[in-house]
Length: 274
Image 1: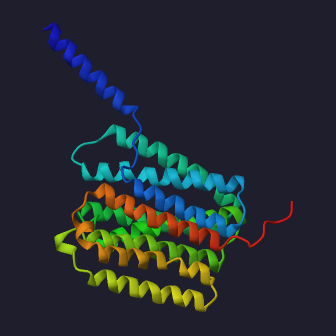
Image 2 (image 1 turned 180 degrees about the vertical axis):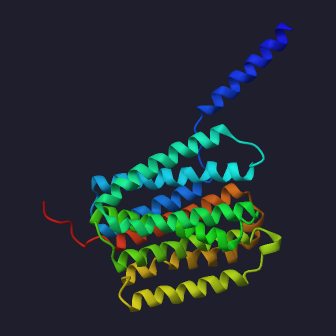
Protein backbone atom coordinates (compact mmCIF):
# COMPACT_ATOMS: atom_id res chain seq x y z
CA UNK A 1 0.00 0.00 0.00
CA UNK A 2 2.89 2.34 0.83
CA UNK A 3 4.54 1.61 -2.51
CA UNK A 4 1.23 2.19 -4.33
CA UNK A 5 0.62 5.53 -2.64
CA UNK A 6 4.20 6.59 -3.34
CA UNK A 7 3.83 5.69 -7.01
CA UNK A 8 0.54 7.59 -7.25
CA UNK A 9 2.10 10.60 -5.54
CA UNK A 10 5.03 10.58 -7.96
CA UNK A 11 2.67 10.41 -10.93
CA UNK A 12 0.62 13.34 -9.64
CA UNK A 13 3.78 15.35 -9.03
CA UNK A 14 4.99 14.51 -12.55
CA UNK A 15 1.66 15.57 -14.07
CA UNK A 16 1.75 18.79 -12.06
CA UNK A 17 5.24 19.58 -13.27
CA UNK A 18 4.22 19.18 -16.91
CA UNK A 19 1.88 22.15 -16.48
CA UNK A 20 4.88 24.38 -15.99
CA UNK A 21 6.97 22.95 -18.84
CA UNK A 22 6.82 25.36 -21.84
CA UNK A 23 5.79 24.03 -25.23
CA UNK A 24 7.86 24.83 -28.30
CA UNK A 25 7.27 24.07 -31.94
CA UNK A 26 9.34 21.01 -32.93
CA UNK A 27 9.75 22.31 -36.48
CA UNK A 28 13.02 24.23 -36.27
CA UNK A 29 13.00 25.06 -39.98
CA UNK A 30 9.98 27.30 -39.44
CA UNK A 31 12.07 29.50 -37.14
CA UNK A 32 14.58 29.93 -39.96
CA UNK A 33 11.79 31.02 -42.30
CA UNK A 34 10.43 33.45 -39.70
CA UNK A 35 13.83 34.90 -38.83
CA UNK A 36 15.02 35.05 -42.43
CA UNK A 37 11.89 36.82 -43.63
CA UNK A 38 12.07 39.26 -40.72
CA UNK A 39 15.71 40.07 -41.50
CA UNK A 40 14.88 40.86 -45.13
CA UNK A 41 12.08 43.18 -44.01
CA UNK A 42 14.32 44.94 -41.50
CA UNK A 43 17.07 45.25 -44.13
CA UNK A 44 14.58 46.83 -46.50
CA UNK A 45 13.63 49.35 -43.80
CA UNK A 46 17.38 50.08 -43.42
CA UNK A 47 16.93 50.74 -39.72
CA UNK A 48 16.43 48.84 -36.47
CA UNK A 49 14.34 50.44 -33.73
CA UNK A 50 12.69 49.38 -30.49
CA UNK A 51 9.53 48.74 -32.48
CA UNK A 52 11.49 46.38 -34.74
CA UNK A 53 12.60 44.37 -31.72
CA UNK A 54 9.05 44.24 -30.38
CA UNK A 55 7.78 43.10 -33.78
CA UNK A 56 10.30 40.24 -33.77
CA UNK A 57 9.22 39.16 -30.28
CA UNK A 58 5.57 39.40 -31.36
CA UNK A 59 6.17 37.24 -34.44
CA UNK A 60 8.07 34.63 -32.41
CA UNK A 61 5.36 34.23 -29.78
CA UNK A 62 2.60 34.23 -32.40
CA UNK A 63 4.36 31.33 -34.11
CA UNK A 64 4.80 29.46 -30.82
CA UNK A 65 1.10 29.91 -29.99
CA UNK A 66 0.13 27.95 -33.11
CA UNK A 67 1.80 24.69 -32.01
CA UNK A 68 -0.18 23.99 -28.79
CA UNK A 69 -3.39 24.96 -30.57
CA UNK A 70 -2.75 22.43 -33.34
CA UNK A 71 -1.83 19.69 -30.84
CA UNK A 72 -5.00 20.36 -28.83
CA UNK A 73 -7.12 20.15 -31.98
CA UNK A 74 -5.47 16.85 -32.93
CA UNK A 75 -6.10 15.47 -29.44
CA UNK A 76 -9.50 17.11 -29.04
CA UNK A 77 -10.98 14.01 -27.38
CA UNK A 78 -9.48 15.30 -24.13
CA UNK A 79 -8.36 18.67 -22.80
CA UNK A 80 -4.61 19.19 -22.46
CA UNK A 81 -4.04 21.85 -19.75
CA UNK A 82 -0.36 22.27 -20.64
CA UNK A 83 -1.13 23.17 -24.26
CA UNK A 84 -4.04 25.40 -23.28
CA UNK A 85 -1.97 27.28 -20.70
CA UNK A 86 1.09 27.87 -22.87
CA UNK A 87 -0.97 28.55 -25.96
CA UNK A 88 -2.74 31.23 -23.94
CA UNK A 89 0.52 32.65 -22.58
CA UNK A 90 2.19 32.85 -26.00
CA UNK A 91 -0.95 34.15 -27.66
CA UNK A 92 -1.49 36.73 -24.92
CA UNK A 93 2.06 38.08 -25.24
CA UNK A 94 1.77 38.25 -29.03
CA UNK A 95 -1.60 40.01 -28.87
CA UNK A 96 -0.42 42.54 -26.28
CA UNK A 97 2.62 43.51 -28.35
CA UNK A 98 0.55 43.50 -31.54
CA UNK A 99 -1.93 45.92 -29.96
CA UNK A 100 0.86 48.29 -28.91
CA UNK A 101 2.43 48.18 -32.39
CA UNK A 102 -0.97 48.80 -33.97
CA UNK A 103 -1.33 52.11 -32.15
CA UNK A 104 2.11 53.06 -33.48
CA UNK A 105 1.40 51.86 -37.05
CA UNK A 106 -2.32 51.26 -37.80
CA UNK A 107 -1.54 49.79 -41.23
CA UNK A 108 -0.35 46.66 -39.42
CA UNK A 109 -4.02 45.68 -39.13
CA UNK A 110 -4.08 43.94 -42.52
CA UNK A 111 -1.10 41.78 -41.48
CA UNK A 112 -2.90 40.75 -38.31
CA UNK A 113 -6.03 39.95 -40.32
CA UNK A 114 -4.12 37.74 -42.75
CA UNK A 115 -2.28 35.96 -39.92
CA UNK A 116 -5.57 35.21 -38.15
CA UNK A 117 -7.11 33.98 -41.42
CA UNK A 118 -4.13 31.65 -41.94
CA UNK A 119 -4.48 30.32 -38.38
CA UNK A 120 -8.17 29.59 -38.97
CA UNK A 121 -7.37 27.86 -42.27
CA UNK A 122 -4.68 25.76 -40.56
CA UNK A 123 -7.07 24.78 -37.78
CA UNK A 124 -9.67 23.66 -40.32
CA UNK A 125 -7.02 21.69 -42.21
CA UNK A 126 -6.01 19.93 -38.99
CA UNK A 127 -9.65 19.03 -38.31
CA UNK A 128 -9.94 17.59 -41.82
CA UNK A 129 -6.54 15.86 -41.49
CA UNK A 130 -5.14 17.84 -44.41
CA UNK A 131 -2.45 19.76 -42.54
CA UNK A 132 0.30 18.40 -44.83
CA UNK A 133 -1.52 19.28 -48.06
CA UNK A 134 0.34 21.51 -50.51
CA UNK A 135 -2.30 24.23 -50.20
CA UNK A 136 -2.20 24.35 -46.41
CA UNK A 137 1.59 24.32 -46.30
CA UNK A 138 1.68 27.15 -48.83
CA UNK A 139 -0.77 29.14 -46.71
CA UNK A 140 1.48 28.51 -43.71
CA UNK A 141 4.59 29.81 -45.48
CA UNK A 142 2.62 32.81 -46.75
CA UNK A 143 1.60 33.66 -43.18
CA UNK A 144 5.08 33.20 -41.69
CA UNK A 145 6.65 35.32 -44.42
CA UNK A 146 4.38 38.17 -43.32
CA UNK A 147 7.16 38.83 -40.83
CA UNK A 148 8.95 40.74 -43.62
CA UNK A 149 6.29 43.48 -44.03
CA UNK A 150 5.71 43.30 -40.26
CA UNK A 151 9.34 44.29 -39.67
CA UNK A 152 9.18 46.97 -42.34
CA UNK A 153 5.94 48.58 -41.16
CA UNK A 154 6.85 48.41 -37.46
CA UNK A 155 10.14 50.15 -38.25
CA UNK A 156 9.03 52.77 -40.78
CA UNK A 157 5.38 53.26 -39.86
CA UNK A 158 4.13 52.74 -43.43
CA UNK A 159 3.82 50.07 -46.11
CA UNK A 160 5.41 50.09 -49.56
CA UNK A 161 5.30 48.09 -52.78
CA UNK A 162 8.87 46.99 -52.12
CA UNK A 163 7.84 45.47 -48.78
CA UNK A 164 4.94 43.66 -50.42
CA UNK A 165 7.25 42.38 -53.16
CA UNK A 166 9.73 41.12 -50.55
CA UNK A 167 6.91 39.25 -48.83
CA UNK A 168 5.94 37.60 -52.12
CA UNK A 169 9.56 36.77 -52.95
CA UNK A 170 10.15 35.19 -49.53
CA UNK A 171 6.94 33.20 -49.83
CA UNK A 172 7.89 31.90 -53.27
CA UNK A 173 11.39 30.91 -52.18
CA UNK A 174 10.58 29.20 -48.90
CA UNK A 175 7.48 27.51 -50.33
CA UNK A 176 9.67 25.87 -52.97
CA UNK A 177 10.80 23.50 -50.20
CA UNK A 178 7.29 22.04 -50.19
CA UNK A 179 7.87 20.55 -53.63
CA UNK A 180 11.46 19.42 -53.09
CA UNK A 181 10.58 17.64 -49.84
CA UNK A 182 7.62 15.95 -51.55
CA UNK A 183 10.16 14.21 -53.79
CA UNK A 184 11.09 12.02 -50.81
CA UNK A 185 7.65 10.40 -50.74
CA UNK A 186 6.55 7.83 -53.31
CA UNK A 187 3.03 9.25 -53.66
CA UNK A 188 4.35 12.75 -54.39
CA UNK A 189 7.67 11.93 -56.06
CA UNK A 190 6.71 13.35 -59.46
CA UNK A 191 8.88 16.39 -60.38
CA UNK A 192 6.14 17.93 -62.55
CA UNK A 193 4.34 19.95 -59.80
CA UNK A 194 7.69 21.39 -58.69
CA UNK A 195 8.63 22.37 -62.22
CA UNK A 196 5.27 24.08 -62.72
CA UNK A 197 5.66 25.88 -59.39
CA UNK A 198 9.16 27.18 -60.14
CA UNK A 199 8.12 28.28 -63.63
CA UNK A 200 5.18 30.21 -62.19
CA UNK A 201 7.39 31.72 -59.48
CA UNK A 202 9.87 32.96 -62.09
CA UNK A 203 7.09 34.67 -64.03
CA UNK A 204 5.80 36.37 -60.87
CA UNK A 205 9.28 37.58 -59.90
CA UNK A 206 9.95 38.86 -63.41
CA UNK A 207 6.68 40.81 -63.21
CA UNK A 208 7.71 42.33 -59.87
CA UNK A 209 11.04 43.35 -61.37
CA UNK A 210 9.39 44.77 -64.49
CA UNK A 211 7.14 47.00 -62.38
CA UNK A 212 10.14 48.17 -60.29
CA UNK A 213 8.96 46.44 -57.12
CA UNK A 214 12.22 44.48 -56.88
CA UNK A 215 15.72 45.48 -57.92
CA UNK A 216 17.68 43.10 -60.13
CA UNK A 217 19.88 41.74 -57.32
CA UNK A 218 16.91 40.98 -55.09
CA UNK A 219 15.02 39.33 -57.93
CA UNK A 220 18.05 37.20 -58.80
CA UNK A 221 18.19 35.87 -55.23
CA UNK A 222 15.50 33.40 -56.28
CA UNK A 223 18.09 31.66 -58.46
CA UNK A 224 19.25 30.03 -55.21
CA UNK A 225 16.06 27.96 -55.35
CA UNK A 226 16.81 27.00 -58.95
CA UNK A 227 20.38 26.03 -58.10
CA UNK A 228 19.04 23.90 -55.25
CA UNK A 229 16.63 22.21 -57.65
CA UNK A 230 19.46 21.40 -60.06
CA UNK A 231 21.60 20.07 -57.20
CA UNK A 232 18.74 17.80 -56.12
CA UNK A 233 18.29 16.57 -59.70
CA UNK A 234 21.95 15.49 -59.81
CA UNK A 235 21.69 13.77 -56.41
CA UNK A 236 18.08 12.65 -56.51
CA UNK A 237 18.66 9.13 -55.18
CA UNK A 238 20.62 10.50 -52.23
CA UNK A 239 17.98 13.17 -51.55
CA UNK A 240 15.19 10.58 -51.51
CA UNK A 241 16.91 7.97 -49.36
CA UNK A 242 19.20 9.80 -46.95
CA UNK A 243 18.18 10.65 -43.38
CA UNK A 244 16.03 13.72 -42.97
CA UNK A 245 18.74 15.27 -40.78
CA UNK A 246 21.04 15.60 -43.78
CA UNK A 247 18.22 16.91 -45.96
CA UNK A 248 17.50 19.56 -43.32
CA UNK A 249 21.14 20.66 -43.39
CA UNK A 250 21.03 20.74 -47.20
CA UNK A 251 17.87 22.89 -47.23
CA UNK A 252 19.17 25.15 -44.45
CA UNK A 253 22.37 26.00 -46.30
CA UNK A 254 20.49 27.14 -49.38
CA UNK A 255 18.02 29.08 -47.23
CA UNK A 256 20.85 30.94 -45.47
CA UNK A 257 22.45 31.81 -48.81
CA UNK A 258 19.13 33.17 -50.07
CA UNK A 259 18.52 35.20 -46.90
CA UNK A 260 21.99 36.73 -47.10
CA UNK A 261 21.62 37.71 -50.76
CA UNK A 262 18.08 39.06 -50.39
CA UNK A 263 18.94 41.09 -47.27
CA UNK A 264 22.22 42.51 -48.57
CA UNK A 265 20.64 43.41 -51.92
CA UNK A 266 18.31 45.96 -50.30
CA UNK A 267 20.87 47.58 -48.01
CA UNK A 268 22.28 50.98 -49.02
CA UNK A 269 25.55 51.02 -50.96
CA UNK A 270 27.11 53.27 -48.31
CA UNK A 271 26.49 53.56 -44.60
CA UNK A 272 24.89 56.87 -43.58
CA UNK A 273 27.17 59.42 -41.94
CA UNK A 274 27.04 59.51 -38.17
